[in-house]
Picture 1 (cartoon, helix red, strand yellow):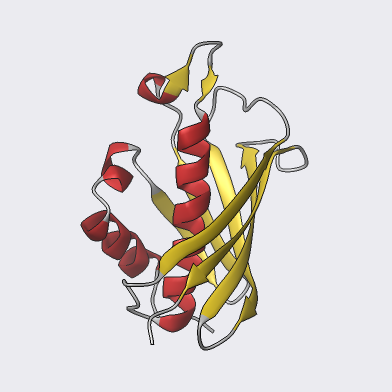
Picture 2 (cartoon, helix red, strand yellow; picture 1 turned 180 degrees about the vertical axis):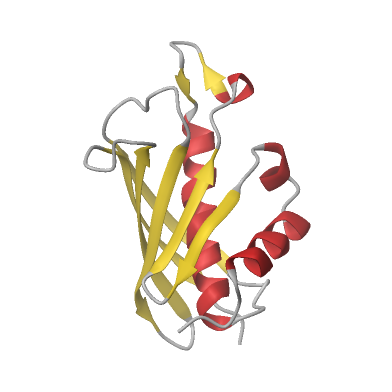
Length: 138
């Protein structure tokens, strides 16, 4: 069950983190299973070698975790990332990057999340795998 809609979560993230607007972060889906977030491919996000930059990939993963936490718990804007571990697996294609996030464990003090990132049209080949923890306000 979700407390907020995808549109509400996207608005909260964009209001609280202006960088989300810069990378055109979109929350495409938010439901009981988790979140599907997207960063559209854009030349301003590409690093030498023609691939999306690592910071862009990490920002999408972190935002997807934040979105799944907001969706589940409501307006907990003071929830903060306390840990993020990322494994870069393959070079992303020059298309939109998608992130599927879910909560693995939720307690009163923290949310442990997992994110799978992949290029649009290629969900079976992970670009990166992320695990992370959000510290929740008391």
